Length: 206
Image 1 (cartoon, rainbow, N blue to C red):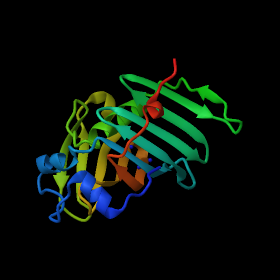
Image 2: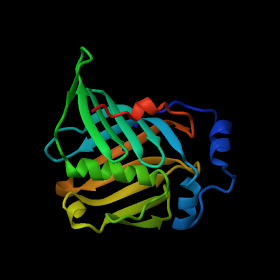
Image 3: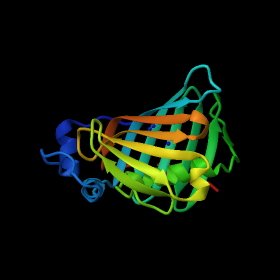
Image 4: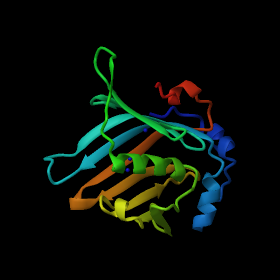
């Protein structure tokens, strides 16, 4: 389940989140409050897909944008250009060839849509949903462990780990444990919080 981000200075990030030196809260409700002030986020991401069917992991890179409450865009740039946008209840998935031509992809993947919709909620601390229940596990890293409670989700996901960074308000990576010993890891880098994102980034053309 693990985006392309531009770095801010550590001072700017701390100001944006009103962070304190005590770190993350010690309870799930406290972690939710730590994330509640995130209104926008952009970052670089690295995705690694592992499955017994592949001789080696499939690695992709790109950039992610999020605007509260639920607009999100995943833009893969390597090894191919592929974009998924969710905005105001609508979604669009398309590829871009070397000449810059867009081709809409009608995959209708329920797994893809569910995970991307959930990620928008996780970035704001909304871990509990109709699809998942959440538990905070102490350790290094500290994890929010999500287990499916909806039948449709449990058919393709066994659990999801959200790894919390040492910096409050930041999720380091998401690991999606899938059926048949497969997994997808999304690592987030160069995170910019609460910066201005042009509305055109999420525009879905009819």
